[in-house]
Length: 153
Image (cartoon, rainbow, N blue to C red; front, side):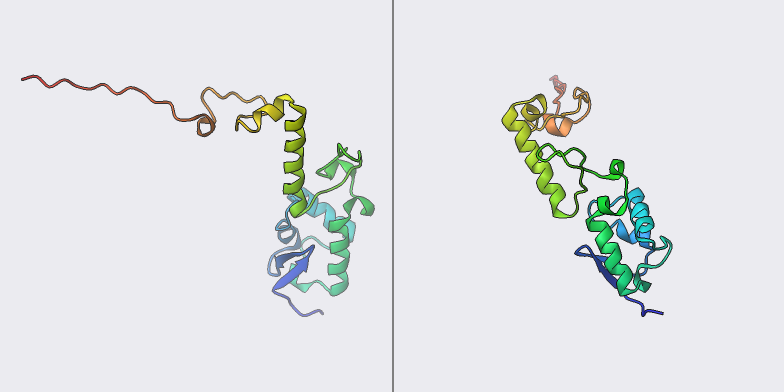
């Protein structure tokens, strides 16, 4: 039996060894609960196993599946970036790539002057939500006039 590790390093992220593998994998940015289940199934590792008792070979296999899920039989509908506008390929973004790609998408929309691109810099909603009563933080406070009582002599 392999010795217990309190910290397991997978995909440049430290995972807690005491937690079940499915729960520990969710600490990686870009891995949700369902995606963690799919990763465990594709790697052939029990999802109820503690992360700290994995062997080095299992860690290596798990890292490979996390970084390249489309090559290990995970269906394309589970990937978080399908039909990339630049390449047209299906891929799954992880770690720092998520924030960078989101920022680039917003800049592209702003350059195109699309409806969403116009609303991003104004900090308004871009998906059709109502803004009269909600999202007041973005629009400013509604000031109500207070009644001032007059003091008589």
